[in-house]
Length: 411
Image (tube, rainbow, N blue to C red):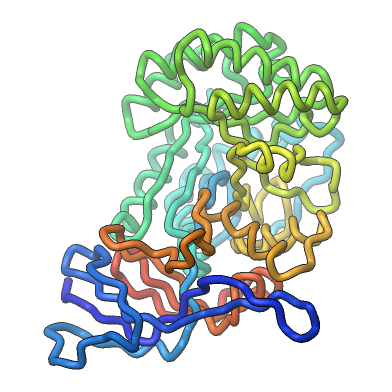
């Protein structure tokens, strides 16, 4: 890889109140040098750039705004119908009915997993994603076939992206043969242990969670558990898992995905659980379900307590949903609308939901990009991060691990 110098890159540094009382972003132009290892070598104000000959490629970014690349922290690469043409979603009355409907088509879809997952990855990458955490079905219907297909798909993107591959027991962890299948998955490419509704699906909260922890500690893997169960069944599951985290010193190594029940209980119960979640450095992964304002945990409250909350697109264009969106920025846009965030700072402060905690504005008013890290940047014609989130520009020039991905309007 040749050394690169990117001139006239705009970074947001601070805000200033205008004559109408509105906060406006203050940006400045910088020159960014990317070395042969795709790492940031220097970040220099344009006014101080040495005009002497530069050995490498020089690219004028013409004032495009630089924002961090995106991390999709909840996805299902093996489920999409992409590449198969249009298919509407079969209506069902419950989660168990949805799982049964999905089980019927698993053997039919397994042969195309690589192609379908590749299409899904490409769609997300071109919108600025450079990390995907995907849950992959491990079940008695298809064994490890989906895992094999997903691993083949992600291999093509290893130069630009990183992946978490979760062994996910979509149809229950406690079924006959699942322990062996999960162990085979963890020996053959899965990087994390998953779980699903220990109460609602496995009908045994303690036993199911113990098995998740047994797998995690046996293979030294992190954990991400789907938890759709509502009300006190859901919060009991939270508490039981946190007990296991504390007993096994697994702080900072687990996440609950969805976790709707935290929004169902009283304020004191919420406060107690949020305190434990933060103390144990457990992340919450949300997907901001459409039309369900109450169907997600109290995200702002968790963030205010210094908890970690991140978003993902979840599955799209699959047996769960007929609608397609591979745009994580759209997820933040949805969240801002649902929670009434309309100001410049209120909107821009949510970007870390899709950058895995990476903020744009720094206390010392320096660029968010730092010397020594990999060159991963989204460039848009936006005036600020708030405009990026609010207006969702599709023309996004990407630098992923030092590789350029030119704008493509995703259809």
